[in-house]
Length: 185
Image 1 (cartoon, rainbow, N blue to C red):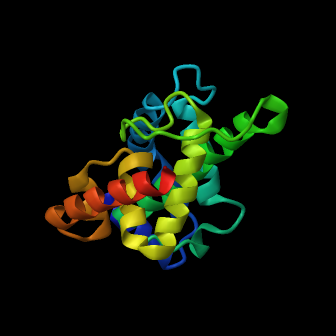
Image 2: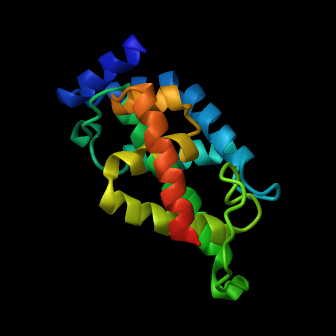
């Protein structure tokens, strides 16, 4: 962890070469998070954990210089990675739901919070739309959902990434779950 933080500090101070050192250090953790996230998806999902990590890394590294990035901490970096993975999965779900593939509107019943997109991409899209509304209302709670749901972090890990207490994270998680469920119905 200390080495990751040092590399992030180097990136922030303008050392573009440090980006090359970052990926090998975070790759296994990103792959674990991606595998955990994809495990919650439908069984016939066409994305693999490796592809999700590579796509997320490409979005994180992008065409801009690494020195343009400002990851303040390990938690901030993994938050950005969670956001990139969320966007990739949303894009993938939207493509699967497109009209040419039989898309349409379906009423969503959120019966199990842990698997809202396990079989239907429209559930993931509805979750994303509700999450965007929550982002406008309460960005910290929305970020907690992204870290916990999309990156697969635990409450304790998410709390550390957001620099809040575990008890506060648990309260925020309970609120966000209830709010999102109500919004999706």
